[in-house]
Image 1: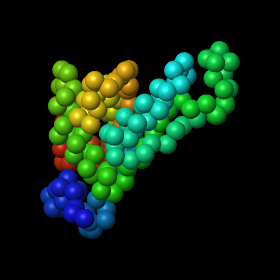
Image 2 (image 1 turned 180 degrees about the vertical axis):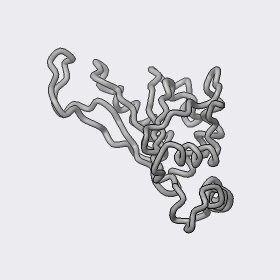
Image 3 (image 1 turned 90 degrees about the horizontal axis):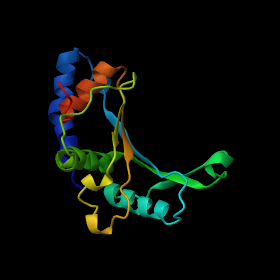
Image 4 (image 1 turned 60 degrees about the vertical axis):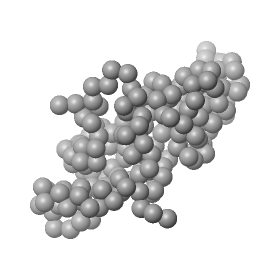
Length: 179
């Protein structure tokens, strides 16, 4: 299997540049992208097939079968019972992660309406979460078959120690942050 092009870009140019910029002694000290987590909450729905439709769409986008997330407690005001499916999530690692990241940067982000760059707010530990309100920006989803658009949160988990390292890593990988 061939190495994904974004991973090759990371090893060939991002890694040496961060070693030089940060004056690190070892390549293993350079922050790296560990995983990408895609999470979509469907909530309590009267349509029982909606969770299956969302799981199918997220599976098409990621190329991996999502895990159904279930309610941990019952809440009577929301007609929610313990164990009811309320969302889906997928964790991407390895080559799937690099391929998804490249498709996200090159294909999905340009499809966002009025896109002016990503906000540069990380979580304090070098990880970045971005919310998308419409999953049809991905080319795998055909508009004809979509009944309801679904939002999702995409979290980029890095091994960075702080936000400065994490934002530098993501920017060097091609994340279009706002100035």
